[in-house]
Image 1: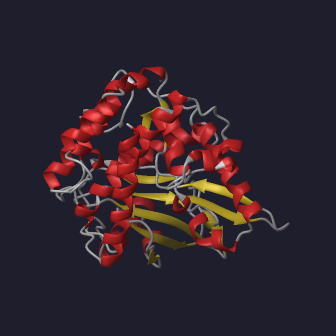
Image 2: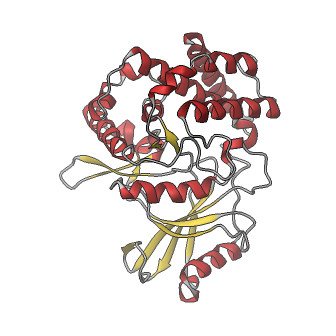
Image 3: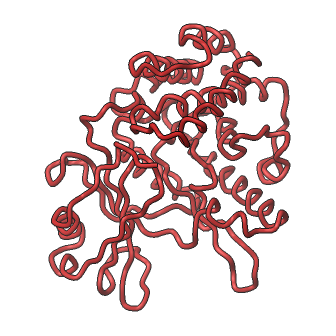
Length: 341
């Protein structure tokens, strides 16, 4: 689906960004291919002729490949938590790298908004393909092993501890000293977005907020702000087949929606549209006891993710029949989560 948030760069702008990041000699002869996946940033595969000194690119046939991401125009209508997301993505990769989590390397980031009116960054290219693109060709055991491996990688990610809870954004209301306060602000923000954007939901925003806030006490069990990706659906996990025929996870991408909070929240997108109890392969890689308290927190985080998915389409300009059917499904799933509260 085409998204209004994709700020595509002109040919001259692409060359200018390469020149600023890598110098004049690499700007000449650089080639660009727009990457169609994703619905927020514009992204390009950038191939430079010859290796780049001091950069962690992927050489091949005398060339070096990078991924360039261009953030949306900041003047667009965006969700409250979508401010400066590319800055979060850059920070996420640096934080995750400290825990030996396979993520893209940050090659060059420009947040000055002088060359463009928005942020952009170059990253190293993760080998392989998205799990979403290959999973239909995998056997059930192969897919289960990859999901288990992915869950194990996220367990490493969650060893990274932040200085506070919530979204690490400038002037974010969610940046708080407790997870209860942070998640409460996150919920309030997305419900305010629903009102502002006129998004219809299964219940009035005030009613949804009351249902979710009545369980704030369950969040006090979270005593450490762990780094959470929160968007680990199959499109954001890259995999490749080894020479011996086995598969491995090669990297996690699109970390711009990361926050510091409850690691249990990660399990929502790992088991997207499924009950975690029906995803034993994830629990094998990330063993956790599904206590009543954990299930309640999972319900809160699942409802929050569905709220985002149910509201964000307005800012993307999605209006196709396909999207309408998808959104209807999300709202039905949201209604089921709210019924549990």
